[in-house]
Amino acid sequence: MLAPHPDVVLAQNSPAYCQSYARDVSARMSRGGAVGGAARGSLGGAAIGAVVDGRKGARKGAAIGAVAGGVTRGVQRSSIYDQAYRDCINGVVRPY
Image (tube, rainbow, N blue to C red):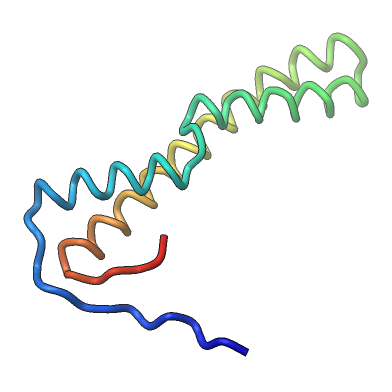
């Protein structure tokens, strides 16, 4: 069994470099951001709504799912950005 890679500490990076790095990591890891989350949420909500209340439920479910999915994915992307920025500014390299 392989052991997990330990974090490697390097020299401190500049804030501008770390902002760019954190944007790239968060974009790659959040898979589409708020728009992607809204699209996935609306599909899931429509499917559940259709089962519960037919066509009318599908419309309501899609709307609720879009809002919930967009907000959730947006918060997730922000959290990923913050962690990647902190790691970068502190010189910690993680295998994202």
